[in-house]
Length: 328
Image 1 (cartoon, one colour):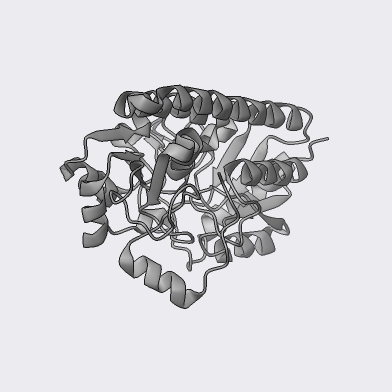
Image 2 (image 1 turned 90 degrees about the vertical axis):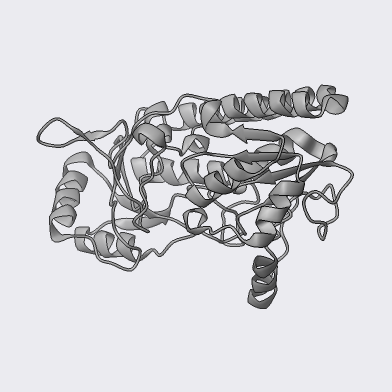
Protein backbone atom coordinates (compact mmCIF):
# COMPACT_ATOMS: atom_id res chain seq x y z
CA UNK A 1 0.00 0.00 0.00
CA UNK A 2 3.00 2.29 0.43
CA UNK A 3 3.78 4.51 -2.52
CA UNK A 4 6.48 7.10 -3.07
CA UNK A 5 5.24 10.45 -1.84
CA UNK A 6 5.22 13.01 -4.63
CA UNK A 7 7.33 16.09 -4.08
CA UNK A 8 5.31 18.76 -2.31
CA UNK A 9 6.15 22.39 -2.82
CA UNK A 10 6.75 24.63 0.18
CA UNK A 11 3.52 26.49 -0.55
CA UNK A 12 1.51 23.29 -0.81
CA UNK A 13 3.06 21.88 2.35
CA UNK A 14 2.26 25.06 4.21
CA UNK A 15 -1.34 24.76 3.09
CA UNK A 16 -1.51 21.15 4.19
CA UNK A 17 0.05 22.01 7.55
CA UNK A 18 -2.41 24.84 8.05
CA UNK A 19 -5.27 22.41 7.57
CA UNK A 20 -3.67 19.95 9.95
CA UNK A 21 -4.21 17.08 7.52
CA UNK A 22 -1.49 14.52 6.86
CA UNK A 23 -3.24 11.65 5.10
CA UNK A 24 -0.85 8.81 4.49
CA UNK A 25 -2.88 5.90 3.21
CA UNK A 26 -2.93 5.17 -0.49
CA UNK A 27 -5.99 3.05 0.27
CA UNK A 28 -8.31 6.01 0.58
CA UNK A 29 -8.97 9.46 -0.73
CA UNK A 30 -5.98 11.70 0.01
CA UNK A 31 -8.33 14.62 0.53
CA UNK A 32 -10.54 12.93 3.08
CA UNK A 33 -10.22 13.95 6.70
CA UNK A 34 -10.14 11.51 9.56
CA UNK A 35 -13.58 10.31 10.58
CA UNK A 36 -15.20 11.14 7.24
CA UNK A 37 -14.62 7.83 5.48
CA UNK A 38 -16.29 4.43 5.39
CA UNK A 39 -13.04 2.82 6.53
CA UNK A 40 -11.60 2.22 10.00
CA UNK A 41 -10.28 5.72 10.68
CA UNK A 42 -6.97 5.84 12.53
CA UNK A 43 -5.15 8.98 13.67
CA UNK A 44 -1.44 8.27 14.15
CA UNK A 45 0.86 10.56 16.11
CA UNK A 46 3.89 10.40 13.77
CA UNK A 47 5.46 8.30 11.02
CA UNK A 48 6.46 5.09 12.87
CA UNK A 49 2.92 4.78 14.22
CA UNK A 50 1.34 5.63 10.86
CA UNK A 51 3.49 3.00 9.16
CA UNK A 52 2.23 0.33 11.55
CA UNK A 53 -1.37 1.37 11.02
CA UNK A 54 -1.02 1.27 7.22
CA UNK A 55 0.78 -2.06 7.10
CA UNK A 56 -1.57 -3.77 9.54
CA UNK A 57 -4.79 -2.11 8.41
CA UNK A 58 -4.20 -2.44 4.68
CA UNK A 59 -7.24 -1.64 2.59
CA UNK A 60 -9.53 -1.42 5.59
CA UNK A 61 -8.02 1.66 7.22
CA UNK A 62 -7.77 5.35 6.54
CA UNK A 63 -4.66 6.73 8.28
CA UNK A 64 -4.12 10.37 9.16
CA UNK A 65 -0.84 11.51 10.70
CA UNK A 66 -0.74 14.39 13.16
CA UNK A 67 2.90 15.11 12.22
CA UNK A 68 3.56 16.37 8.71
CA UNK A 69 6.35 15.00 6.46
CA UNK A 70 9.52 16.87 7.34
CA UNK A 71 8.20 18.19 10.66
CA UNK A 72 10.28 17.41 13.74
CA UNK A 73 7.75 15.45 15.83
CA UNK A 74 8.86 16.82 19.20
CA UNK A 75 7.91 20.31 18.03
CA UNK A 76 4.32 19.39 17.21
CA UNK A 77 1.55 21.58 18.56
CA UNK A 78 -1.95 20.15 18.09
CA UNK A 79 -4.31 22.40 16.11
CA UNK A 80 -8.04 22.78 16.58
CA UNK A 81 -8.54 20.96 13.27
CA UNK A 82 -6.49 18.02 14.49
CA UNK A 83 -8.38 17.92 17.77
CA UNK A 84 -11.59 17.65 15.76
CA UNK A 85 -10.06 14.86 13.68
CA UNK A 86 -9.30 12.92 16.83
CA UNK A 87 -12.88 13.26 18.03
CA UNK A 88 -14.21 11.88 14.75
CA UNK A 89 -11.77 8.96 14.49
CA UNK A 90 -12.24 5.30 15.34
CA UNK A 91 -8.77 4.88 16.86
CA UNK A 92 -5.70 6.85 17.91
CA UNK A 93 -2.25 5.25 17.75
CA UNK A 94 0.55 7.08 19.56
CA UNK A 95 3.70 6.67 21.64
CA UNK A 96 3.24 8.25 25.05
CA UNK A 97 6.21 10.24 26.26
CA UNK A 98 7.46 11.41 22.87
CA UNK A 99 5.01 14.21 22.04
CA UNK A 100 3.45 15.83 25.14
CA UNK A 101 0.82 17.77 23.19
CA UNK A 102 -0.32 14.56 21.50
CA UNK A 103 -0.50 12.75 24.84
CA UNK A 104 -2.69 15.51 26.23
CA UNK A 105 -4.97 15.72 23.19
CA UNK A 106 -5.54 11.96 23.02
CA UNK A 107 -6.02 11.78 26.77
CA UNK A 108 -8.83 14.33 26.55
CA UNK A 109 -10.30 12.92 23.35
CA UNK A 110 -13.47 10.78 23.34
CA UNK A 111 -11.99 8.45 20.69
CA UNK A 112 -13.01 4.92 21.67
CA UNK A 113 -9.80 3.02 20.88
CA UNK A 114 -6.59 4.55 22.22
CA UNK A 115 -3.44 2.54 21.52
CA UNK A 116 -0.29 3.56 23.38
CA UNK A 117 2.67 1.82 21.73
CA UNK A 118 4.75 2.33 24.87
CA UNK A 119 2.56 -0.21 26.68
CA UNK A 120 3.09 -2.90 24.03
CA UNK A 121 6.79 -3.56 24.72
CA UNK A 122 9.25 -2.96 27.53
CA UNK A 123 10.93 0.43 27.82
CA UNK A 124 14.40 1.04 29.23
CA UNK A 125 16.45 3.97 30.42
CA UNK A 126 19.07 5.36 28.04
CA UNK A 127 21.16 8.49 28.26
CA UNK A 128 24.11 9.75 26.24
CA UNK A 129 25.27 6.14 26.06
CA UNK A 130 23.19 3.04 25.27
CA UNK A 131 21.91 1.48 28.49
CA UNK A 132 22.37 4.69 30.45
CA UNK A 133 25.43 6.68 31.45
CA UNK A 134 26.41 6.98 35.09
CA UNK A 135 27.91 10.16 36.46
CA UNK A 136 30.71 10.29 39.04
CA UNK A 137 28.16 9.68 41.81
CA UNK A 138 26.92 6.50 40.16
CA UNK A 139 23.56 8.05 39.31
CA UNK A 140 21.83 7.62 35.97
CA UNK A 141 22.00 10.62 33.69
CA UNK A 142 19.47 11.33 30.94
CA UNK A 143 19.95 13.50 27.93
CA UNK A 144 17.92 16.14 26.21
CA UNK A 145 17.55 16.35 22.45
CA UNK A 146 18.68 19.25 20.28
CA UNK A 147 15.47 21.11 21.01
CA UNK A 148 15.97 20.98 24.76
CA UNK A 149 13.23 18.37 25.22
CA UNK A 150 13.95 15.38 27.36
CA UNK A 151 13.76 12.18 25.37
CA UNK A 152 12.16 10.27 28.18
CA UNK A 153 8.97 8.44 28.87
CA UNK A 154 7.37 8.37 32.31
CA UNK A 155 9.96 7.23 34.81
CA UNK A 156 12.84 8.22 32.52
CA UNK A 157 12.37 5.54 29.86
CA UNK A 158 13.60 6.05 26.30
CA UNK A 159 10.64 6.11 23.85
CA UNK A 160 12.63 5.31 20.65
CA UNK A 161 11.47 1.69 20.53
CA UNK A 162 10.80 1.66 16.77
CA UNK A 163 14.53 1.73 16.02
CA UNK A 164 14.84 -1.81 17.39
CA UNK A 165 13.12 -4.14 14.87
CA UNK A 166 12.41 -6.69 17.60
CA UNK A 167 10.64 -4.20 19.87
CA UNK A 168 8.86 -2.68 16.87
CA UNK A 169 7.56 -6.14 15.98
CA UNK A 170 6.24 -6.52 19.54
CA UNK A 171 4.41 -3.22 19.13
CA UNK A 172 3.05 -4.37 15.76
CA UNK A 173 1.57 -7.48 17.37
CA UNK A 174 -0.15 -5.35 20.00
CA UNK A 175 -1.51 -2.93 17.42
CA UNK A 176 -2.83 -5.84 15.36
CA UNK A 177 -4.73 -7.22 18.35
CA UNK A 178 -6.16 -3.79 19.11
CA UNK A 179 -7.36 -3.43 15.51
CA UNK A 180 -8.96 -6.89 15.65
CA UNK A 181 -10.88 -5.97 18.78
CA UNK A 182 -11.94 -2.53 17.54
CA UNK A 183 -12.92 -3.68 14.02
CA UNK A 184 -13.81 -7.38 14.32
CA UNK A 185 -15.32 -7.57 10.82
CA UNK A 186 -11.80 -7.43 9.39
CA UNK A 187 -9.96 -9.28 12.16
CA UNK A 188 -8.72 -12.05 9.88
CA UNK A 189 -7.05 -9.58 7.54
CA UNK A 190 -5.50 -7.70 10.44
CA UNK A 191 -4.02 -10.96 11.77
CA UNK A 192 -2.65 -11.83 8.34
CA UNK A 193 -1.16 -8.37 7.79
CA UNK A 194 0.35 -8.31 11.28
CA UNK A 195 2.01 -11.68 10.73
CA UNK A 196 3.46 -10.46 7.43
CA UNK A 197 4.81 -7.28 9.03
CA UNK A 198 6.31 -9.18 11.96
CA UNK A 199 8.00 -11.48 9.43
CA UNK A 200 9.46 -8.48 7.61
CA UNK A 201 10.77 -7.02 10.85
CA UNK A 202 12.22 -10.37 11.88
CA UNK A 203 14.09 -10.51 8.58
CA UNK A 204 15.33 -6.96 9.15
CA UNK A 205 16.60 -7.93 12.60
CA UNK A 206 18.54 -10.84 11.06
CA UNK A 207 20.08 -8.48 8.47
CA UNK A 208 21.34 -6.21 11.24
CA UNK A 209 22.62 -9.11 13.32
CA UNK A 210 24.58 -10.69 10.48
CA UNK A 211 25.57 -7.39 8.87
CA UNK A 212 27.17 -6.07 12.05
CA UNK A 213 28.61 -9.34 13.35
CA UNK A 214 32.18 -8.78 12.11
CA UNK A 215 33.16 -5.19 12.87
CA UNK A 216 36.24 -3.26 13.94
CA UNK A 217 34.58 -1.08 16.59
CA UNK A 218 31.39 -1.07 18.64
CA UNK A 219 31.19 2.70 19.17
CA UNK A 220 29.30 5.21 17.06
CA UNK A 221 28.67 8.91 17.65
CA UNK A 222 25.38 10.68 16.95
CA UNK A 223 23.97 14.14 17.53
CA UNK A 224 20.75 12.64 18.87
CA UNK A 225 20.44 10.02 21.62
CA UNK A 226 17.84 8.05 19.67
CA UNK A 227 19.62 4.78 19.00
CA UNK A 228 19.96 3.27 22.45
CA UNK A 229 17.66 0.33 21.74
CA UNK A 230 19.33 -0.40 18.41
CA UNK A 231 22.76 -0.22 20.03
CA UNK A 232 21.72 -2.51 22.86
CA UNK A 233 20.15 -5.03 20.48
CA UNK A 234 23.32 -5.45 18.42
CA UNK A 235 25.99 -4.97 21.09
CA UNK A 236 26.96 -1.45 20.05
CA UNK A 237 27.64 1.69 22.09
CA UNK A 238 25.98 4.94 21.08
CA UNK A 239 27.67 8.14 22.21
CA UNK A 240 25.47 11.19 21.66
CA UNK A 241 26.21 14.89 21.66
CA UNK A 242 23.08 15.66 23.62
CA UNK A 243 21.39 18.58 25.29
CA UNK A 244 22.41 20.97 22.49
CA UNK A 245 20.35 23.23 20.27
CA UNK A 246 20.75 22.38 16.55
CA UNK A 247 22.39 25.72 15.86
CA UNK A 248 24.78 25.68 18.82
CA UNK A 249 28.33 24.37 18.97
CA UNK A 250 29.24 21.41 21.19
CA UNK A 251 31.06 22.30 24.41
CA UNK A 252 34.82 22.19 24.36
CA UNK A 253 34.82 19.54 27.08
CA UNK A 254 32.45 17.27 25.16
CA UNK A 255 34.42 17.71 21.92
CA UNK A 256 37.63 16.78 23.72
CA UNK A 257 35.97 13.77 25.34
CA UNK A 258 34.60 12.53 22.03
CA UNK A 259 37.90 13.17 20.25
CA UNK A 260 39.69 11.00 22.79
CA UNK A 261 36.97 8.35 22.58
CA UNK A 262 37.06 8.33 18.78
CA UNK A 263 40.83 7.80 18.79
CA UNK A 264 40.69 5.08 21.45
CA UNK A 265 37.78 3.18 19.93
CA UNK A 266 38.55 3.58 16.23
CA UNK A 267 35.51 5.77 15.53
CA UNK A 268 35.53 7.16 12.00
CA UNK A 269 32.14 8.84 11.64
CA UNK A 270 29.84 11.32 13.35
CA UNK A 271 26.21 10.73 12.39
CA UNK A 272 23.57 13.41 11.91
CA UNK A 273 19.86 13.33 10.99
CA UNK A 274 17.61 14.38 8.13
CA UNK A 275 15.10 16.47 10.13
CA UNK A 276 17.53 18.59 12.16
CA UNK A 277 20.61 20.69 11.44
CA UNK A 278 23.89 18.88 10.67
CA UNK A 279 25.96 21.76 12.05
CA UNK A 280 26.79 20.12 15.39
CA UNK A 281 27.93 16.88 13.76
CA UNK A 282 30.05 18.65 11.17
CA UNK A 283 31.64 20.89 13.79
CA UNK A 284 32.64 17.92 15.91
CA UNK A 285 33.78 15.90 12.90
CA UNK A 286 35.91 18.77 11.64
CA UNK A 287 37.55 19.27 15.04
CA UNK A 288 38.18 15.54 15.48
CA UNK A 289 39.18 14.76 11.87
CA UNK A 290 36.22 12.43 11.36
CA UNK A 291 33.76 11.78 8.55
CA UNK A 292 30.02 12.56 8.70
CA UNK A 293 27.05 10.54 7.50
CA UNK A 294 23.31 10.18 8.06
CA UNK A 295 21.84 7.82 10.64
CA UNK A 296 18.10 8.38 10.34
CA UNK A 297 15.97 8.09 13.50
CA UNK A 298 12.96 7.61 11.23
CA UNK A 299 10.76 10.17 12.90
CA UNK A 300 9.48 11.15 9.46
CA UNK A 301 9.94 10.36 5.75
CA UNK A 302 10.78 13.12 3.27
CA UNK A 303 12.28 13.34 -0.21
CA UNK A 304 15.67 13.57 1.53
CA UNK A 305 15.19 10.20 3.23
CA UNK A 306 17.29 7.28 2.02
CA UNK A 307 14.27 5.19 1.17
CA UNK A 308 10.51 5.32 0.77
CA UNK A 309 9.48 3.59 3.97
CA UNK A 310 10.62 2.26 7.34
CA UNK A 311 12.32 -0.89 6.07
CA UNK A 312 14.22 0.85 3.27
CA UNK A 313 15.52 3.59 5.57
CA UNK A 314 16.51 1.06 8.23
CA UNK A 315 18.45 -0.87 5.58
CA UNK A 316 20.20 2.38 4.64
CA UNK A 317 21.00 2.88 8.34
CA UNK A 318 22.52 -0.59 8.42
CA UNK A 319 24.78 0.20 5.46
CA UNK A 320 25.88 3.46 7.11
CA UNK A 321 26.69 1.64 10.35
CA UNK A 322 28.57 -1.10 8.51
CA UNK A 323 30.78 1.48 6.85
CA UNK A 324 31.33 3.48 10.04
CA UNK A 325 32.05 0.44 12.21
CA UNK A 326 34.26 -1.31 9.66
CA UNK A 327 31.91 -4.27 9.32
CA UNK A 328 32.72 -6.87 6.69
